[in-house]
Length: 229
Image (tube, rainbow, N blue to C red; front, side):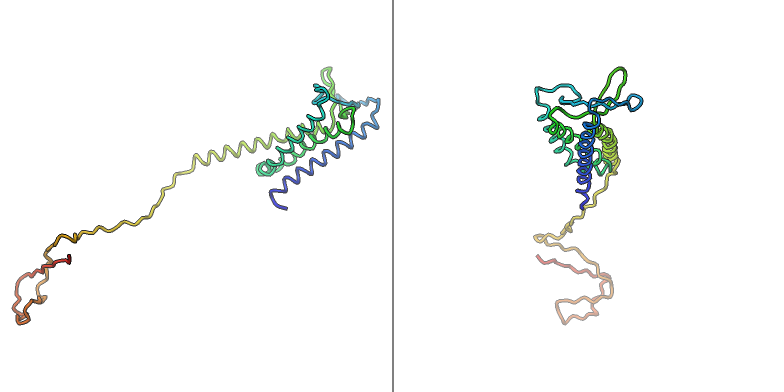
């Protein structure tokens, strides 16, 4: 299993588990909670409700709840799969969070397709004279959103750390190597006659072989060198 595919497989496994558990719990609720109201304790209760609205009972949109739900599910899956592996590098729980949301996004439209009366809700909570009824898929999607808060925090922290490292990085001096041509002092067109001193005692070869080497007694002899043109 490659490192890049492991987070995606974890996401899909969590999403499949959410869909399976949610649909099974809804089937059990339909059987056990028909025309019944069960007090669980405190503000919690169990009551069966078929919700045909798009979200939280807000609007039915003239029967467009199911198509729009499936469209939203497809968009969420298309967005979650590509970012799963990169986000897992910053937060190992990111695939789980995305899997919870993807599973919930699939489970509710599937429930709406299997139950024409509407999505099965059976978990209730009362506060301030108001009651809200939801299902396990709703719990999963909100849990995924809360977990994504940690992922976002880690991503922002990594981004800030990267920016600080770039700002504080010292400038490095560049060492360049290049060939520097040696200056040529001799001009081929100008004849130079610099005098080169010769130490005393070095015999000087003259043009006439008949002259004796001993006759050269100059205190300092000089050679006139003519560099070739």
